[in-house]
Image (cartoon, rainbow, N blue to C red; front, top):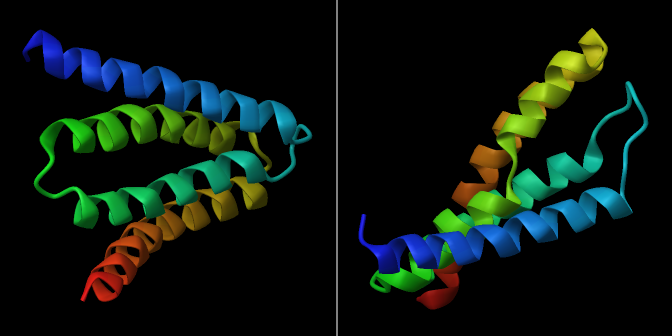
Length: 119
C-alpha cells in the first residue's frame, strides 16, 4: 500500500473512531441492556457505505477515505460481538441477529435508494 493511500484511510479512521466514541459517550447502555448506540452506529454506517458505493464509484481516494477510513472507524463490529458475548442470552442473540440483518439491509437500502435517486 502506498503512503498516500495509507494516509487517506488513517485520517478517515481517526475521524470515524472519534465520532463513534462521542456517540457512545452520549448514549451509554446499562450493563445487560441492549446496546442501542452501537447498533445504530453499525446500521447507519452500513447505510452510508451503500450510499457512497454508488456516489463515489470512480473516486478512489474519497471512497477509501469515507468507507474504509471514516466508516471503518465509525462502525464497530468488534464491540458489537463483545456486547453479544457479555449480554444476557436473549438480549445477546437478539442483538446479534438484528445487527447482522440490519447491517445487510442497510447497505442494500443505501445502495438501492441512491441508485434510484440518481436515475
